[in-house]
Length: 207
Image 1 (cartoon, rainbow, N blue to C red):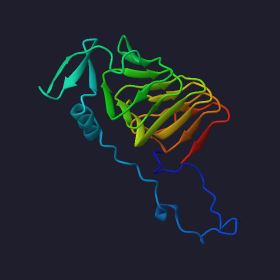
Image 2 (cartoon, rainbow, N blue to C red):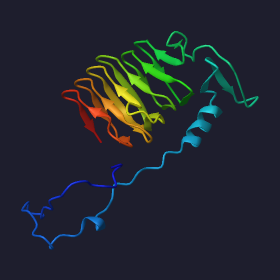
Image 3 (cartoon, helix red, strand yellow):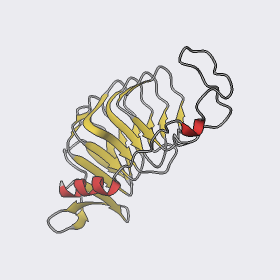
Image 4 (cartoon, helix red, strand yellow):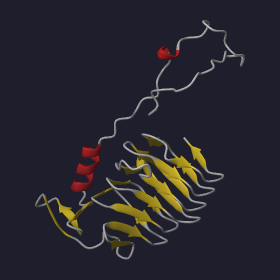
């Protein structure tokens, strides 16, 4: 559970592949544990504020943080023009040639990315959910932590489309990642508090 607990009755294997006899193996409690990484949410938010890419839904209205005044002001969809649209408290991308850069953060809403051939060199993060629904597209981030959701939902990051390729780690430190599409490839780490589901077919995670 969360990489730190193993349920059930584990069977220990010797280096040559044969089962270890009782009492001849190192106890499970002494084995190295999978670490839970510390994700600096405040630091990610601050970087987005410094770059003027921190957005927040306030009473259902999209606002952007103004670094010059250190306050939020009403805003239209984020640039580039024609890529983003506002639907309730969801920011949607429906642009087949969408590109992003820098550190982007959304508070109080979800992000839905539907376009193809999408690229970037930064981080997209939110305290809501991130949904990827494209088919045959690419989502490219050169950042180590490419796509981050701080939602506590079992589907904090939800991948529904088919044939998508992702570059950059998927991170859901408080929730889960749901991979229900088919033939998707994730080139980067997948970090999550718990698994929501991997129900698709022929998906590949290269870490």
